[in-house]
Length: 209
View 1: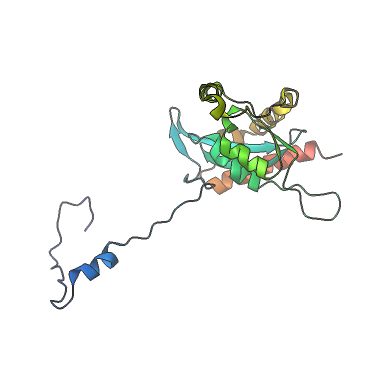
View 2: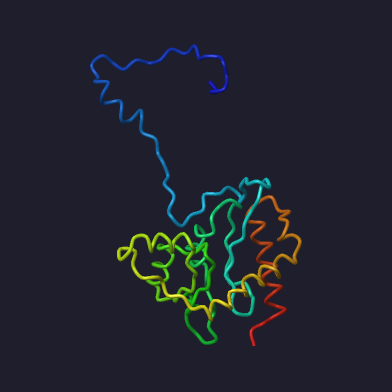
């Protein structure tokens, strides 16, 4: 019977045979398959989440120095940006001018303070990618409070960080498309296709020289 129903089932419960130990039946009766999600998966349904403004969505974007989108991941609006960093880097593929596999490892990644975490810095360090990410004030205080155990501050190139505005300008070009900015699409895969079409239009306006 449904759990919300006030009625009860009149069907008799089958009792185990007298010659069977009930303890042997317990593991089979109580076992339930549980699927564990990986660290790089975003468990949002249709990339919709509730926040103060209602149902919201978020686009995570990688852009090159010409303000052209390279990769995108969608998630619910209340999800933190750092959760989508690993899936976003996994989608990066840049075709080479000659024959060969596409490039998947940029020389440098510029990110804001939301991506300042030990896991992201270790991920970039393991792939040989330079990280230009500022350290938030709370992380600086915690590192100084620990003294010598806090370690050295991460390397930060202030001159290179001035070029991080390219991704903000890429977002402005995407938001010029009303279907991307307001998300009229109900399903997430349709909305991702809308973002891809807008990205193709940006690439056609500013092709690679």
